[in-house]
Every structure is written in structure tokens, then in C-alpha cells.
Length: 396
Ligand code: BGC
Image (cartoon, rainbow, N blue to C red; front, side, top):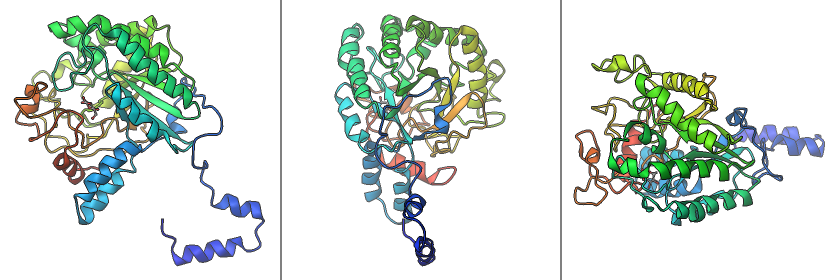
């Protein structure tokens, strides 16, 4: 920050004659930079986001800074501002766990580090774009080489607060895509793996949210109850972990928070889904969770929800054209069940490749409303990132 001449004068005037401790306090931030000086204990029966800011992690910062270097003028300046917005880091392979530790350096005491746990055996069973490294049946590797390693790391960084999003799409797939062979084969491992993650990562410096898809997925009237029961069953199987706060919605999604009547409300089947925006979804799914006996507070990924209208169908999920960055992370949601808006999907990272010859090519990434060309899931897409900035609402 540059100090204006006026500020300098005021500062100097205040300093003269003030007792030493007053001078020090005047310039001191809410918390000194660097990790907290003692172990963090999060009370998951409360909304921790009122005390913590989602940390803008250095891994995403590096991606964004490299992207900004390819840009010029105001666009480049806007790009750099994205690096200061809190975003989750994805531990999407065993090897990529090594991305976490460098990013934990210097996390201020009033920040919370967002981490996505995402490596179940037979991952992404109803699609191809994000198929993972572990095959169905490799549950022991998931436990010992992935979850145990994360648990050890988080325990070692006990002075840092962590918010975890647990296994996007996994349990929702068991509710709506269990007619598919891949999901049938993956189901037992998903349930066992998520329960294991709940138990092992139930640490004092952690608050957990399990993925619950979005309004256009488990929000259908007929899906609410089975969806909530699926999640609650796993929660109970894990011994009702104290640090599980509820659910995450719209992860890597496109739905708007409070659009009226909602982007797809006037579709012929709109009458069968009362969760036409994410706020309604949180209310309805939250109520179903309470009935099913699971904590029911939510965080909502608003990262790419800024410019609706690109999707031809509600279920289209891959690199949607014309998308824009959306509302910034905040705990001021105006909704008692919604703890915070967060950015979970790092905007600019692809949802899946558009290369039809790739092993993980999914036809959704070839649809008319999918941005092309797009690289493999998780890889950087410069043109897409620039589009997200251009279409951002609020503007970046
Ligand atoms: C990909 C992951 C990636 C994540 C965040 C997912 O779709 O499968 O590899 O880390 O998106 O970009």
C-alpha cells in the first residue's frame, strides 16, 4: 500500500507525544502476520467464518500471477487482484499433497486455509473428465497414502485453521447415478472412504463440509430425502464427528445464489424442483439433513456464478461458456444456514479436456456450451481465465 502525503502527516502528528504502546497498536493489524501462536480450536457448532477469512493460497497466486504476466493494461491489473481472493487448494492426487505445505507458510492467524479432499477410488464415477488415480478397490491406499498423510500434515500445522470440502460429487453420484456400473462398483469404497476421512480428519483445527452437489442435482423434490439420508448415513457410520459442520454446495458449479425465479425455473420440469437457486437449495436440503440427523450448515461456491445464461441445460458442468467470476468469499450471506460464500474451484483451472482423443474426454466437454479448446481437468486455461475476469460480477 502506498501512503498518501496526508496520511504520513497524520501518522507523524499522532506519533508525537503518544506513549510508545499506543504508537505500536495504531499500526497493528487484527492479528500479527504468521501463524497463530497456539493451537487452533474450532467450534464447529458455530460459524467459524465470522472470525476467519478464506486464505488466498500461494499455489493459486502463482497460477494467477503467471496468467497476469501474459496480459497487459487494466486486464493484467484485474488479474492480479484475483490472487488476493481466498480460494481453496485441491489435493487431487497423492503427489499433489506436496503442494499444501509450501502454501501453509505465513498463513495469518485470522485466515482459514481451504482444502479440497478429492482422491476416492473410482473417482468421478458418472463422468470421465476427473477420473482419478486410484482404481475401485484401492481403498487401503486411499486411507494410508492419502487421508492418513493429510491428517498428519494438518495435525503438524495445529496452529493453522483448516476448512475442508470432502470429496466433491461422490455421495451425490450414489444417489442419482447408481444405475451406472461405474458408480455401483465405486459405491462401497466411496462410503467407506468418506467415513474414514470424516473420522481421521476430525481434528480440533478443522471444520468439515461434505459435498452435496447443487440445486439442480440433489435439489429435485424426489432427491432431497435420499440425498440427505445418504450423507447422514455416512456421517453416522463415522461416529458423528464433532468437526463436521454440514455441507458444501455448487462446488465447481454455476448456479446463482438468489436468482429469481432461477435460471432454469421455467423449464418444463421446473415444477419438480423447488431449489431453483442455491439459497433455496440450502434451505430445502438443510431441512432434509436435519430430519436425517446430520449437522446442516452450508458453504456455497460462488466463484464462477457471476454471469449466468451460458448453460443450455442445468446439468451442463464442463467449462461453461460466458461464465464470470462471482460474489467474493464472505460470511455475510444473509442466510442463517449458510456460513459463507467461498471460492472452491480455482477459476482458470479446467473442468475437463475438449480433446476428443483423450482417455478422460467426456462428451459434456464437447457440448455447444463448453469452452474450447480446454486442457485436462485442473490444468490452466488462460483464455478461460481472461473470460472469467471480463464477465465478472461484481467486477474484479
Ligand atoms: C480436477 C482436479 C482439479 C480440480 C480443481 C477437478 O475437476 O479433476 O484435478 O484439481 O478440478 O481445478
